[in-house]
Length: 195
Image (cartoon, rainbow, N blue to C red; front, side, top):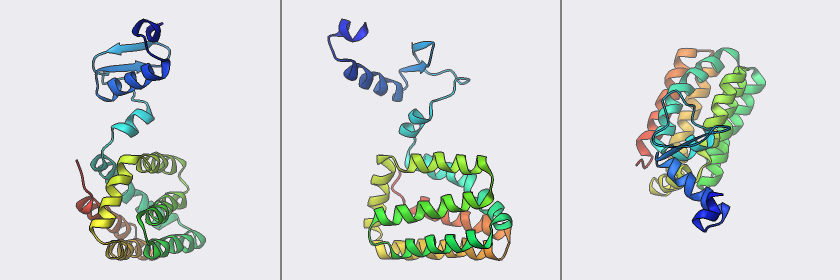
């Protein structure tokens, strides 16, 4: 056993292998083993490894690829009940007094938009992004942004953008919803502290 040969615990060995994998020195394939070198391009990266590798800029860029289209679909498919729930989530972002409250309300708003499409893949994709957003790295950057941009001003700016997305959805205007979500995420990207 490798841990015994190295004179360390299995937990220490697992932690070291995780670091080596995140740094790209090794890669693992369940059922086949651990390999030295870069992961081949055809090998799928496990979601939790992806989550730890992703920078805040990676997260925002992925959201920009997906969420405007999801907002456009929601403009066509959201029920009146969906829109009412989304309005409440948007109002909660405005009432947030700290970044944790804001993040919970903001996540509910964005995942609620995906749910209102009724598309299980869109919901799942946004769920993965939401899980990555809950990682420490994103939270640290969001906390810095919230404090730097003085929380109340930040929530008011983002709240106006949430309202613009909802207004477009309520008008059943997919193009406007797409543009509003794109503008919202680009504004978040602009103020986030990125590596």
